[in-house]
Length: 229
Image (tube, rainbow, N blue to C red; front, side, top):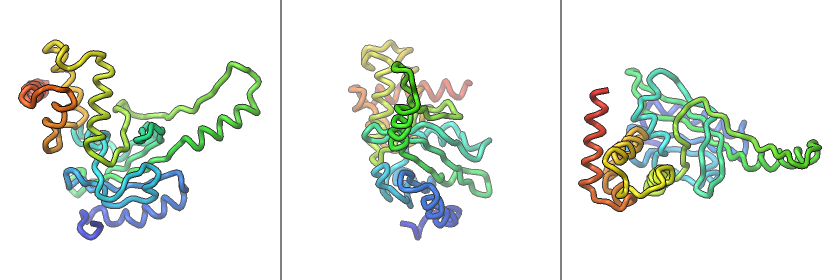
């Protein structure tokens, strides 16, 4: 797969090895070729950190970057929160790789599993803190207001995480929402780039336990409203 990646991405292959040697075994470095639609991971170092592999799919964060064109006025996003399949928390950063026309063709991502460092900090806190009620838990700092990234290699798992998280926030099923609430719900998914992918309407409708035409109808409404804004 490496042989047929976008030419702009090839110089980053050696940089990936350099970064993993510096960052150590708790960090993975991932190269996404975004000229592809679904199977965007073309190279990965220390993939066991998140459990992903070459040929896996883009994350919800990457879809959101593409949908909102977050790469247009910045070169990278650093130190934001990502969540692994098993619930582990990662400190993540992504570098936007652009072509001569400043279009996004790839992303170089670094994800560090901070659970090891959290445990080390808890041990240090135990021996250096005198208050019995004090418990310091390190927080991942973010310089952006995007949603948490889900480090799933499987596209259906990633979409499920995004949709179910929005349902949790809504506290009601999709069918029980009012038309305005349904429009707002689909708008959130649209802004996160969920509908950039083929068959995404069918995947989302299955998760929402509704019909494809229903999701498509609200999606068209969201697109029309977005054109007016």
